[in-house]
Length: 464
Image 1 (cartoon, rainbow, N blue to C red):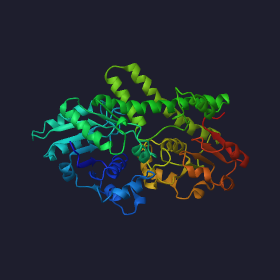
Image 2 (cartoon, rainbow, N blue to C red):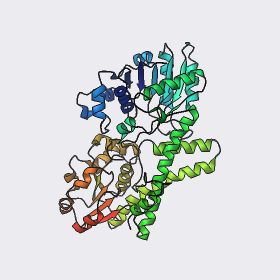
Image 3 (tube, one colour):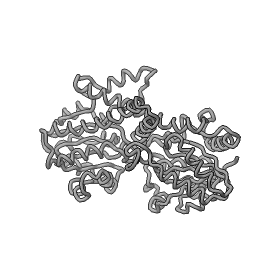
Image 4 (cartoon, rainbow, N blue to C red):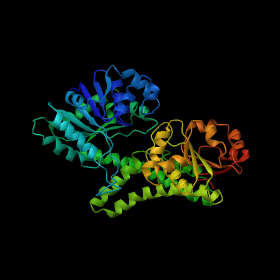
């Protein structure tokens, strides 16, 4: 089957960049990204490519090359669905905040709404591709919804999970180490998988495109994120041990990372992992295991989350205890709010929870992040519902100048590993702070010895 037109439902962190690269690499395919959020679509269509709603290095060049040629962003959802040969579902699947599975299971209401809209609108056969991160056997539910429309249209369901790392998403798409495509192994299913393989093979070697059954594909996505998060929590657990034994977690990580069986990736100690996938996917895995009565399996994976939450709490508690057991009325500067550098994504960022802890201790928080807006930072705190929106706006100040952020501060906490923080004139920063001047490096980003020579009292994650 030759794919001529692709529709992607969802113009977020996955759908936007992925479809932009497909359009760039497959100029003969018309790619339309649709979303009911008019503001988001308007941002994708902004002539100023620096104002795209998603910040990823290199994304502006990709969009600039393909947009208007064969890449389109639209709110005309029904039209794009009906015209497409292949439809990607790339909408949000947040953790449920209500009912059965609250706090663990994925909320699939947006996925189901997409399926029902596809079923209602379609007048020709479609290949429907799960791009969102989904629980195992979601494809079965999609299939039942789509096949019971009674309009004679055939639907083939594929699972094509994304393995992008935010901050390097374009490079990950251009040079993926693997693309996973799951589907049925009957005649139609094999043809559908082959059609999607053909799209990716326009720029990737076919040996990197793996095909499986749909259930293996869905579970592989959850498992990959769970294994990566497990590594982060493992090194973070050791970081606390290093601090009390005067070891250095970076030296430990280097020593074990040179073991070819372990490798060096995801062994960087930090204040904790964030992002849209790790916590959500592990909780989903825990919920699935519990639903099958596999309590020992569920407990094992839940410990990864418990360790991550502990790391954030103890970092905030360290700030309080170091500042003479009180931060009430003190200005604490958070440098960085995004969950990692080179992205404006703040979902589950450690900064949100550290700020919330400090606000509970009546600190006055000032935040600087080069890519995250004041609107987003305040929305993140409001979402926790710990205090009123008015209190958040009174206690939290967001500034666009790092010098202003640090001036008259009692302490600075590095929350995101932005490269620009390494280039600051830290002597000038020190001179403008209250003394003693404290610096808490939650990313082990800066040279602690040099900071201490300047006069800072420093705390670095994982360093005794």
